Image (tube, rainbow, N blue to C red):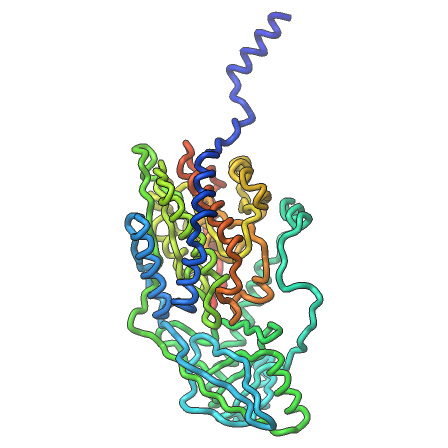
Length: 521
């Protein structure tokens, strides 16, 4: 028996343990982060400047440049190092709205709720006329309208019936939602991505042909119905920001309730007269795109060249003031680094904060940054700094509080994140899921094998009311939720900067190949 016990003890000494020790959590640092983040928060002040003062921040616009310069100055005031606007490459033309109006004059007067589509030109003069309903579902439909649309106000789609909904626009994740989210996706249940890409490419090709046909026919203005109710205008781009691109037709998205009223009048053969004036401006003075970057330098001689990053995109669409998409995320990451500087953190690794631009056109700023410093996802040729970055944390899903984190398929970080979240369970942040999420800047880092994560957030009314709409304004932000998110992000960044090792990585991805989905314009 003694021999067996001795042999067993010897095995324990020789074989490394299979279970790691609990990830250390600095509760004293978290207490200081909470004290500063909840007791002296500046997150709503930051958000107000980005939205109320600088307004919509379309990539390439003067508004975005001014907001970027303001953010750089705030980083300097807070004591961050190397605060700068860093060019990431040629973007193209900026664009902004100077003024517009659209009114129904007959059969009775009605001011119409609408908004111009980005990168579409203005009207050369005020356009007055009766709108025409046009159905262009394929190239075969062009022949029916050939030679009949010069100077016309074209209603490009049939009216959509407004729906009365009995569920609230805004909601939080329920415990059942979070339990489902925490489960791994069903094996083999991946959507047919290539089929979706082909469909999207076909749709975009048809839209380009429709735009060319309308322009060649001399259409004066195009009207389209919004996909939102209650006067909410979902509007993005309608023309190209690329230099020397073919011009498009002045285009506006109209509230479906007003669009449908006009269509019903036309169906009744009752004459309708509209008056439309649109004045927009293209900005060609500076065609570069810029990211905003700043740092809290590391102090550990062994680790200070390593990097922990956090970021969000600063650009927005143009109808609202880009509050939930994504002044919310930008304000949270700015507040997170402000908190860390305010409590006097001396990180072992360098903490780098980034505010990206060109996100709405296809993650342009973050992808260019990753390719410059870390590697090329198309070839997987890696740069020296690829080995130095530990992690990138992102926030870009609206104003909702953080409820957990997506592991993006990286199971090795699960015990780390579970430990880091535990002090925030009483604030509703409990869920760690192996699932990934898409659509924002962490994908640029993940594409070259860098640990990169987006937090799970309560949806609130992001998809139903604010995302890419005229209602995406400061008033839709939830102060308590943004304060909670800033505190959690500051804590995650702090612990990543202080731990002995970089965060574990997934195997490197294969080089990306095949045609890519063209960026949204």
